[in-house]
Length: 206
Ligand SMILES: C[S@@+](CC[C@H](N)C(=O)[O-])C[C@H]1O[C@@H](n2cnc3c(N)ncnc32)[C@H](O)[C@@H]1O
Image (tube, rainbow, N blue to C red):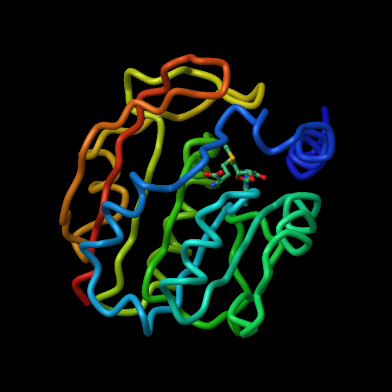
């Protein structure tokens, strides 16, 4: 069996962005939640699995600094070639987000996950992910999770998924997070198939 990073590298090296199953032309639904976050202009954002998302360009316009992480070096290399980061706002990181992040990593004001967490199925991997969220988000920081809902597809990118409800996300985050907003959103993928997601925004209380 391929390792996780080889699996993702093979997908990114063999597929144009617009043919990726999760490709979206714009990040308007994510931006709806981001609008509820105060102090965007000064914020440092952490993206745990950025892929080649156009959200990166949006954040370049709206935020101060961005850490773009992905397990796939291939995806990161494509983003580096595409994005015009004139002001040096982006740091790139190639880590498995279920493993401990480097202690030297600057803490973030906002964590934005679209369709990454739901690929983690092993209990230790899921717990490792949430440990990173708790450790690398500043007090009063915001976390956005956009994951396949309980009624969503059971597989994506050839991998089985752990689908989420808002209640399960709240439970995983624990009492130091409060739910600020959430909505259901059915993404229509490039093949025309509906993909029901939950869109959620949480705030770290302390
Ligand atoms: C479905 S894609 C979503 C990409 C991007 N967030 C978007 O909305 O276009 C999932 C992304 O998560 C990355 N990924 C999968 N498992 C990961 C892990 N354990 N750690 C970090 N990134 C991971 C993949 O390489 C891929 O870029």
